[in-house]
Amino acid sequence: MDLTYLTTLLRARWEQLKNAGDAGQSTTELAVMAAVLILVAGLVVAAIRTKVLEKIGIINGG
Figure 1 (cartoon, rainbow, N blue to C red):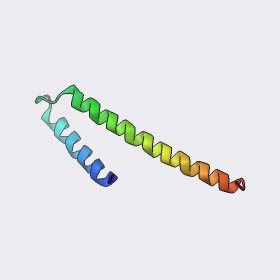
Figure 2 (cartoon, rainbow, N blue to C red):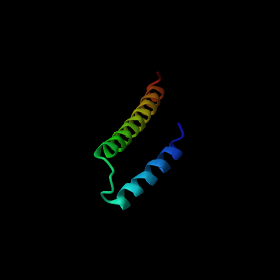
Figure 3 (cartoon, rainbow, N blue to C red):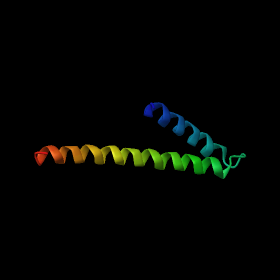
């Protein structure tokens, strides 16, 4: 998955929603966007945690 593309897509859609006001966008779409952002943030945290644990293992001689 290309994160740059996903970020650009989400940013563009968010701007459309923000500028449209209440032009028929559903709360479901906003909830899906929020869920995707939370999922991506969780994946980033998991990746950072994995790398940190690897580094700690190397430092401790493991």
